[in-house]
Length: 398
Ligand code: 5GP
Ligand code: MN
Image 1 (cartoon, rainbow, N blue to C red):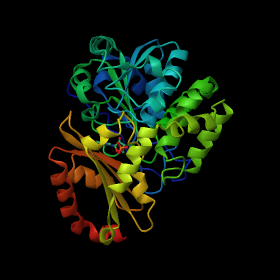
Image 2: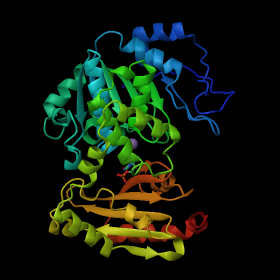
Image 3: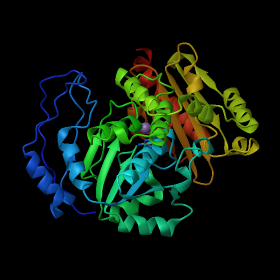
Image 4: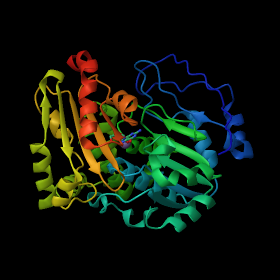
C-alpha cells in the first residue's frame, strides 16, 4: 500500500454529554477536507475519530467524517464491503445493513467475506449474495482490484481477514473503516472508530443517520442491524449496551425489524449434535476458584464426534461467566486443519481480556470479550495459560 499522510486532528473537547459531544476541531476547514476528498490526494489522507477523553461518548459520527463520506459517495461508486474472518452476527449484520443501504443509494456494492459464516446467520436478507473468498477467490480478487471504495467493518487491522490481507494491501481503493475494537491500525483513509460503541451495527445506524438517510431504513436493513446489535451485546446485557443502543434498537423496530424473529432464528435453531457438543464442553470445564477463572477445552476429536459445524461453539465461553464469583472465562478450541488452538476470552468487570489476549495470545478485541490463538498443543496451551494466572491474581479479585 502507498505510504499514508495524515491530516492532523486536534482532539481537545470542551463538553462531555452523550448527545452534545462536540466533534474534534480540525486544522483544515470543512471545505478543504471536501476538496481533499475529491482529489487524488484523498487516498493519502486520514480523517478519523479518536477515542474521546473521560466520559465523552461520541454517539454520532462527527462532522468531518460525515462530510468526507458524503463527498466520497456523491457519485456512484464500485464498493466492496469486507467483514473479518469467521464473521459473527455483528460482522454479517453490519456488512449486510450497509450493503442494502448503499444499493438503495445507487452504488454498485458487494460483500466479500474472507470465509464462510455460520448457518444461524444465513437467513439474513442478502446473505446469499455474500461472496465467500474461500470458494470464489478469482471473483473476489477481481471485485477488490476494481473497487473504488472498500469498507472494512467490525475489525481494525488487516491481520483479521486471513488470506484477503494481501489483496486489500494491494488495492488502490479509498478505504473506510467502521469499527469498535481497540487500537486501530492505520490502513483506512476514513476511520469511524469508536471503542465505546456496543457494535459495528450501531455505528452503521449512526452512519446512515449522519448522512440524513434514516428514512431509507427498511425492514431488511432494520433486521440486519438489529441482529448484530443483539448478538454483540449478548441480547442487550453487556456493559457496552447504553441508552442510546436501546434508542437505536427502538428505531429499528419502528422501521419494521422483526425483533422476536431475530432472537428465534439466531438462538432457537440448535441441532441435537450442537447440544451434545455443549454437554461435552460443560463436562470439560475446569474451575480455578483461586483466580475466579474457568476454562473449557474442546479437542478436534470431540468436535468430530459431535459433527461440529461452523458456529456450533458460538456462545459456549459465556457459560463460564454464569458461575457465581467467576470473572474470567476462556474456551480453547482445537483446529487441526489450521494447526492452531483458537481461543475466546470473556470477563466481567474491569479485567481486560483485550490486553490479556494481546499480550499473550496474539489476539485482541474488547475489554470484556476478546480472542486469540496458540500454535502449540492443547496441553501446552492450557499449561501456559495457567502459568500466567498468578500474575493476574490481584486484578482478578478486583
Ligand atoms: P470471539 O471470541 O467471539 O471470536 O471474539 C470476541 C472478540 O474478540 C470479537 O470482537 C473479535 O473481533 C475479537 N477477536 C477474536 N479473535 C481475535 C483475534 O485473533 N485477534 C484479534 N485482534 N481480535 C480477535
Ligand atoms: Mn462487533
